Amino acid sequence: MAKKIILLSFATAFLAVGCVAFPEDGYYDGRYDQRYDHRYDNNDRRYDNRYDRRYDSRYEQDRRTWERQQQQRNRLELERRKQQLDQRNWEQNRKNQQEWDRRKNELERQRLEQQRKNSEAERRKRAEQDRQKVSKERQRLEEQRRKASQDRRKQTEQERKKNIQDLRKASDQQRKAAEERRRAWENRR
Image 1 (spheres, rainbow, N blue to C red):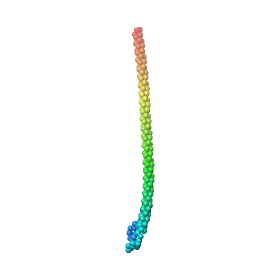
Image 2: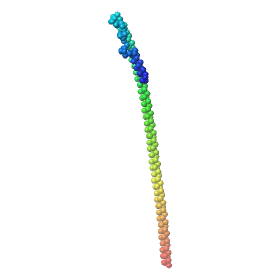
Image 3: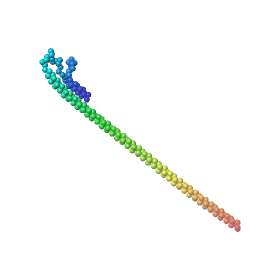
């Protein structure tokens, strides 16, 4: 691109000057140089000045035409460069937008993945807590049943012992009463 610009600058400079100006010749502005026209020597009045005016008007017309063409070329070149710049900017913006969308989608996917993991961990935690509650409740109920069973067994054992003691007392009392009756009967005899 830089080479093209340099080449275009040289071509424009060469065309603008019209020819190469050598330092010893001075500056050439495209007009008729009277230094090399010997017709003007000795103030020759026979020369027709109309030729100069015609030449100058043609030169001015050519110069204006050339300037219009240069301006048009420059304008077209500027428009082309502007279009290229706009195209590059559009491409860059599109790439940036795609990159931004990709990042946004990636962040959204990561957020959803993290949210899913968190909800899964929360669900597992609740399930574990529920399982522990159920296990504790089961153990508590089992302990209550065992305690109730032991209490019934103890009560039954105490009642059985009491019944046995009552029976022994009753049988001892009956034996004593029978012994006393036998003694009383033996004493009566």
